[in-house]
Length: 232
Image (cartoon, rainbow, N blue to C red; front, side, top):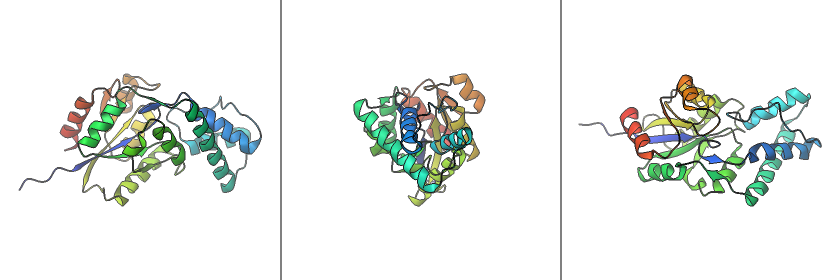
């Protein structure tokens, strides 16, 4: 008897992969931090590409010698989300080329979709919701779970298992736009689709070890065919 084909599980990064949020993530972080510390910090010493919100806060604490307890961190992230809500209310995120079509195709094919994002959960869904992408994603790993993206990826896989999508039932891959996404996927044993829609080009993603690289998400059919052939 022929073995049943496994359900596809596709885990997505958000910023630079699905959406361009006009740099609002950084600005919301700056404003939220200032709400609690009383000082506006431009965060010029922090790179947000491929970073995680919890790690950004760790970098800020190290740079400024801040000591923040769990309650302070919760307050900061709450304000970050509120500031992001205001910013996106004035100017919603912009979809990366092909993103909506790719998500529609995956949903039509019956794939399960999850998130592996450095955003805290609230900010992730605010960004996705600003363009109606939130309906595609029921679970994920988030930047308030861990500072390290590899651990966020593991959290996403754990959330998938809780949703009944364990490794026995699914064949998974990750989609991201930075070498950090690629490294996280490879660390948890997932093939990675690298999309050169952020600050890194195709060559950098290939060098990082992406299994397949695309300039954007407009070639949805080709990417699905790669999944069918590669994931088994």
